[in-house]
Length: 125
Image (tube, rainbow, N blue to C red; front, side, top):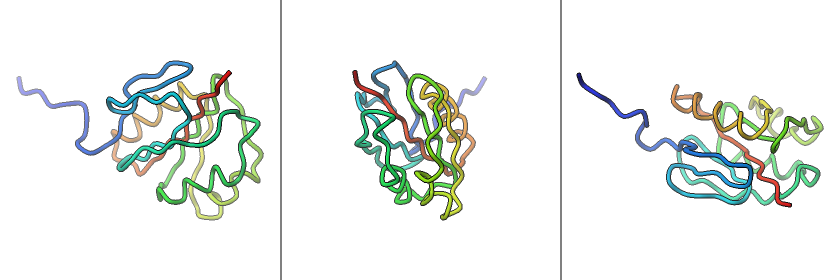
């Protein structure tokens, strides 16, 4: 029987998630991150849900995704629509879920070849 790897070459995959950290491919992150389907994973300078601003979400425009999966931390929380204005104006869809669910959903969409990015909040304290 011929086996093929589950992982697509050059595609970022979230390989593990814990409440205070996660792994993209083999790299451990202990802070919030932006994960594009391809390219470099970036630190996302936000430590608390309440500190999110429109500028935090505008950073995702550089990644040029069709869809953003926002992981809101350990529980599902929705941001004010005004914070998503730049993404909505650009025609980029946004789905919100807790960070664990966002990691799983991102992986499924990335494996399907979708142009997706994850904005994953890892709260401190």
